[in-house]
Image 1 (spheres, helix red, strand yellow):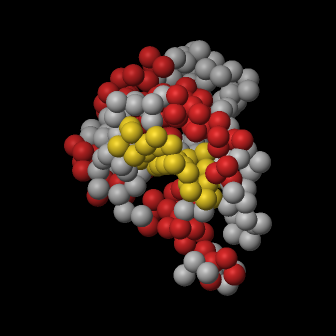
Image 2 (spheres, rainbow, N blue to C red):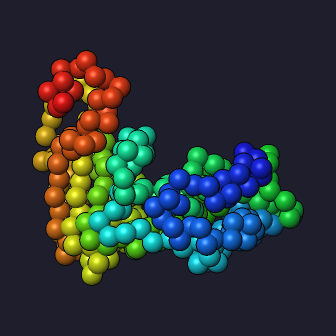
Amino acid sequence: MSSESLTFHRLGCHHPSQLVLPDLRSKDCPKILDTFKNAFIAKNACDITKEDYEPLLHLADQTVPCNKTLFWSKSKELAHQFTRVQSGLFTLEDTLLGYLGDDLTWCGDARSAELNHQSCPHWHECPSNPVSVFWNVISQKFAESACGVAQVMLNGSLSEPFSKYSTFGSVEVYNLDPRKVHTVQAWVMHDVGETSSNSCSSVSINELKLIVSKRNMTFTCQNNYRPARLVQCVKHPEHSSCASNI
C-alpha cells in the first residue's frame, strides 16, 4: 500500500457517494479499516482467499438503487467522468470498498504483523494475491447486487471492446442475477476523432450478447451513447463530430 495514512484518509467516510448512498453514514470506518487489514496482514501474499475478505464485505455492504449500476471495461476514465456528472449512476469505484482500493496496491507478510511497504506480488506472479482477490470478490458482490437495467461502458476504440478475460467478462457478467436484472445495456464508446465504426455489430459484442441472452437477460447496444459522448466532447469542443452532437 502506498501509505497507511492514505488508507485512513480514504476511510474518513467523506466519499462523495455518501450524499446519494446515505447508508455510508452509518459505517464504522476505523472498524472497516481494521477488518480490511485483517484480510491480508500476517498472511502469505500469494495465498489469499475469498473467505479472507468476507468479514469486510459484510461490514461495508452498500446497496446501489435499481437501474443505477454502471460496469466498465477498458473505459475507466470516461466511466468515472460520466458518473460524476450523471447523477444517480454508480461504478464499483463509487462504492466505499471500490473507493478504498482504487489505484492502490497492498499486501502483508506471513512473518510480520505489519503492512509490507517493500514489494507486493503482481497477479502474473500469483493470482491469489491480496489485490486481485479483493477486486474479484467486490466485483462479484457488485454484480450480484445489480437489479433492473445494468449498464456497461466498453471501449470501441479497441479491436475487441468486450474481452472474456476482463473483470467484466470473467466475473461481473456471470454474476448478474437474471431474477433481478432484466436488461444489459452496452454503451460502446469510441475516441473522439476516430473513424466511425459500428462496434455493436462486431464479433466481440456479439459474444457478449450471446452470454447475456443465454442467461435469460435482454441485451441492447448503442454506439457512442450521446450523454457520455457529450462528456468526451468537453475536451474536444471544436471537433466536427462533437459540434454535430451539441
